[in-house]
Image (cartoon, rainbow, N blue to C red; front, side, top):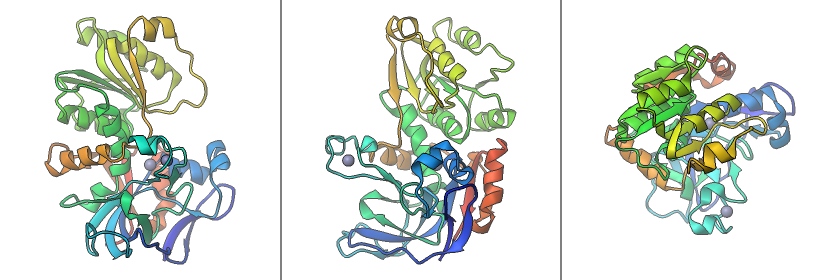
Length: 345
Ligand SMILES: [Zn+2]
Ligand SMILES: [Zn+2]
């Protein structure tokens, strides 16, 4: 079958043939229709410091995908059948550590990620544990292929928050930030403010429903947010950029007693005035990793299949599998929203 692989340590990816995956009794074999390409794939292709420490080649890339079931393992119940359209949670967890056994599998001590720690979905076929597979129903595979990053946005916006009627600030309007804007609107936020330094991304965020857009290169973000909220600040701040200055802004812009949901990954330590910006303000801080298994997936499926959320404006580029380099270039340019590969059908 066709695959996109990292064959050895160093920059670059190969489009090459590899044997079809072997499947276990508890697995489902899926023919991949569409796959999402993201910054993680770019890091692996470029062989940056993170990739050097984490990736053990050879490995097939791709952790965001959707497709059609072609075979079901003998121990899998009758929930799944050949022909069904599905997507899957790409974090494969142990099921028996303390976190897994207390409903917190997204922070499993032994998480193995497809396309990172084991062979992934930039391939004609992938075998997945049935426990990770989610039926798409009426949701098309183009959308199914982006439910992994969209799930990060659902996890960020809806965990521990009360969105209806609230003011939501989304800092960083890459694809996940744009999804977060749409989710906040769909969940009933009264005002959604998006910030980014990239005009293309701000335009995408406007398309997803952001009512106020700010560019920190020209606007005093904190002053504008205080102005828009009668001096109070935002109820919920979603920090999606990982930029140290943006993290500082998040804590200045949140209201007393508000919530800061941190998803963006800063490269190093970030200075923070904990006394003034967190403790005296009574702020709650939540670290977002992956998607809650499987509350996030059920919420997402409901929002999508009811038509409350249409994420399609965020998909800006589509390429055949063979054009992975062009797909990565689109991401590296900063001018892309979500980029997807058309693999099967
Ligand atoms: Zn991703
Ligand atoms: Zn575990």
